[in-house]
Every structure is written in C-alpha cells, then in structure tokens.
Length: 416
Ligand code: EPZ
Image (cartoon, rainbow, N blue to C red; front, side):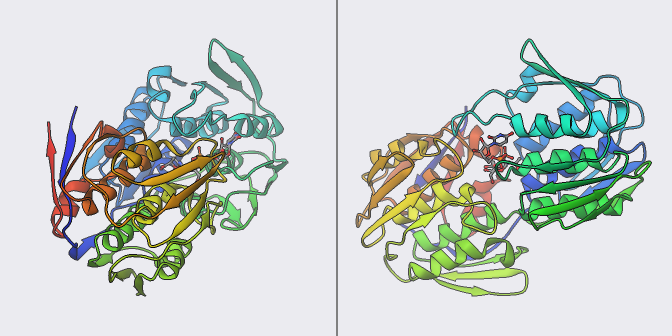
C-alpha cells in the first residue's frame, strides 16, 4: 500500500489548477443510464471513485470510453441491473445508479452500502422517496430490490437534506409521469451541476440549488455533452495548504462562490484571501487566529472541509470549537493529529482544539478521504518527517495530490 512521506516546514508558493468535482462527476456519470444516447462529459477527474463507478457502469452494460478528463458513456441496452456488494461496499455513491435504473428500466438490485468510518450513512430517505414515486422496494440479503412499471410524480419532503438522496430522486423523477416536487432538497453546487446536465438531456427541472426542486417528467432523455464543475473541496484543501504553511498560492480554475463559507472562515482567522473570477489567491502571514465553526449543508461550512480546517486550527493562536453537525462520527483524524502533538479534546460532536505553536512529524494513518487530507496538511507544517499510510483513502477523492503539492514547493513523495 502506498504512503506519503512529507518533510514539513516549507511555505508553499506558486499556482495550482483545480480538477473537476468528484461529487459532480459521479452523479453525472450515473445519469448516462437515463438515455440510450451518448452522454459526453469533460473535466472528469482521474481518481479512485470515478474509476470505481466506471467499473460499476460497465458491469451494468454501459459502453464507456475516453481518457484525459473526457468520457463518453452509452447505456443502450444493459446486461445487468445489479450493483454488487463488493463494488457498493467500496463506494457508497454507487447508490446513485438506483434512481436511474428504476426510472428507465423499471428494476434495480443494489447492495445496501453499509456504514463507513464517518457514520452509518443509511439510504432510508432514498428508498422512501422512490416508494413515493410508486416503486416497490424490498430488502433481501443486504440488497435493495426495486421495481416499478412507470414511476409517477409525487411531492417528496426530506426529513434531512441529503445530497445523493436529492440527486437520486431528481434523476428518477425526470422520467416519471407528471410533476415531482422535492422539498428540503440539498442545495449543493453538485446538485445544480447535475440538474444542468439533465436539462441539457431534455429534462424539465426548476429550482435546483434551492430547497424546493420541481421536475416535470418527460417521455425520454437524449444525448448531451457537459463540462463538470471544479471541485470546491479540492480547492478548499489547497486554500488550507497555503494558509497552514504560511505561503502564497494562486488556486486556479475554481468557482470561489462554491466555497464562500470556507474563505470567510480563513479571513476570520487572519488569512488573506483575494477572490477572482475563477481563482483564489491565498496569502498567510504567521500563525492563524483560532476561530469556531459548525458544519452545515450548503451554503454553510462544508462537512468535507472540517478535517482540513481542524489541521489549521491545531496550530492556531487560541482555542477553537469545531462542531460536526452533518455526520455522526467524523473525527477519526483527531487521534492521528494528537500523535503529531495537537491538543484536541472531543466531547460528543464538538472538538475543542487548543492551538499549539508547533506540530511534530510522525507516522500516521489515514482512515477516510478527508481525514487523510487533514494529515497531509498537518505534515506540511509539522517539524520533521511525517509518513501518512493507507493513502488509497486519499486517492479516492484527489487527483495526483502529491504532484500538485510538489509543484508549489511541498517536500512530499509517494512511496510504494
Ligand atoms: C454526499 O454524501 C457527499 N458524497 C459526501 O462527500 C458529503 O460529505 C455529504 O454529501 C455531505 O455533504 C457524494 O456526493 C458522492 P448525505 P451523501 O446523504 O449524499 C444522513 C466526500 O468526502 N442520511 O448528504 O452520502 C447521513 O447519514 C464525501 O467526498 C440519512 O439519514 O451524504 C448524513 O448524516 C464524504 N438517510 C446526512 O444525512 C439517508 O437516506 C447527510 O448525508 C441519506 C442521508
């Protein structure tokens, strides 16, 4: 298993380009199941989760070709309607094929995802919504079995905002008979990007990006080509990399409007952030100030940025309270940060972070995607050498992170 070896203490300087958004590419790729025509995507990031969903789509019978950020997908006729456990287990977002399969083919057999290190992560809201649309749902041997003649539009109100739940049901509703209204829908930019793609395919969706989305069902969807939006979490991770090392970095090809809550917190912590059209310039002078934050659905502070920001607060001047209000147990990075000399106490879903002047390098272990990013960031500023093992977690959600960091001065290398 690969690991990263990082020599800390060097301020980052230079320019880095942001790749396409993992969490937009995944639902957009699943949308290929909604039509027999070709779906062309560009700016698709080359990372683990994209490779995993490609395996799944090909398993179903989708013709997939491309490379270098381009993908063309054609789901003319399928050879399977089943998403097997060994694939869904490695990537929960596989559940995104459920809505499209039921909507277009009237059947699907998708393994329940099981939990992961950041929480049980059920899909009860996905299933309740599909039932509302008229699907029959049964649970057998750890699989969801869904079938429907033709889905019928309905009013669906989510108890909690769910990103992939909103995406699954929005896709299913595009081919349902009549109108569907999703209430308390997720407002993330990735939901908007998927809605833009679906509308280009001939769907009739209004309100994406607001808590109320209306979908008027159509007979069928057609070919489209679409450029996936930039990854706001990768962009956010690089803003913290610049801040934590006391450097100056220009982050290009990003959408500043997608990470306003993060840039606002950086500015509150005394980091200079200059906002451009499609770039952010981050400059930091010395130790950041401690700030408090609470994760929230978009446009609040993204839960996917909590671990990264905690690494910054670990060296801040003062005490910060970090509340994780979206997932149940998203503090797996804390134990590893403690091994680097951080002073953090977790009580329930609040982490009390007492900033320390210096972290020290140490061998640490990644447990989930964003926790591993947090450990890399801590290693960039820690005194001495940090080795981060199990970085397959990181490779799921970042494209060539060590190459991008080295290009702006980080002393980091991948060791087999
Ligand atoms: C998406 O996951 C993202 N993944 C996650 O990013 C992100 O952390 C999360 O949204 C929150 O922003 C993708 O988009 C592929 P949720 P998702 O459904 O959709 C509960 C990363 O790092 N819930 O919005 O699975 C759930 O347990 C990943 O790239 C139910 O109770 O998250 C959680 O507490 C990690 N029942 C809360 O809602 C359901 O049916 C939000 O989860 C669905 C969700």
